[in-house]
Length: 284
Image 1 (cartoon, rainbow, N blue to C red):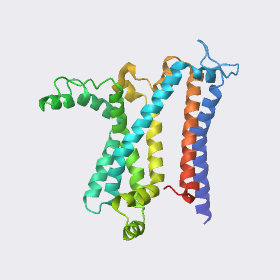
Image 2: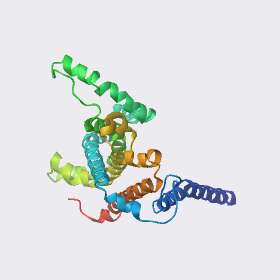
Image 3: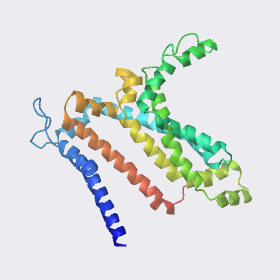
């Protein structure tokens, strides 16, 4: 027993040390840097200032924030519309095809998302697979200008982030109590009513969890807009990257990161409220 207790204590200490060094300490440094100044000779320096946050009111930055929210929100909605039926189908399936379909969802994780994003270029470019197929079928007369547009960025985001929506919803659907569905049908509810009043409310925690896992990366992934959107597509992730690596303005980049962290914390609080306090409420 003493050996087990010592092992547990050692494990907890190791976890806390790891979290402090690689999570809490970097976060505190970013927050502290966001209140410092910057010049050509020093990445960060005194005096303490709120000017970095005041610059967030700049029209250009506001437009980038708005565009990032719109694209991330649209990506999340598309992933939900596509992923929910697929997740429900996999979760309710009883045949041997279930493991195969689940494997199809997981396979993209075996390859770097950066490589998969480059592979999309071969599909959506002017002389790519998609346009060549559409022209061969007679659906279009000339190639569609998809690459280096917001549509290409959306395709890349949905393609890379769709598994993060499917897996939480699928896990939530698998935990459904079939007796509730059977009871609804015994009381005369049709399939749509059962889906709307029983299945959807019970899977809301999975929906919110998947939405968070999709929304936040969609706002911060910088290489997908760079590769598929070109110079015209600058999102919040690209803005933070440029401030740190190109402009060398660490305080400003830290201020953007702090705002993004605030958004993350808000979404997590919403998720906690739904999964805990929200259980006492009706979702219908």
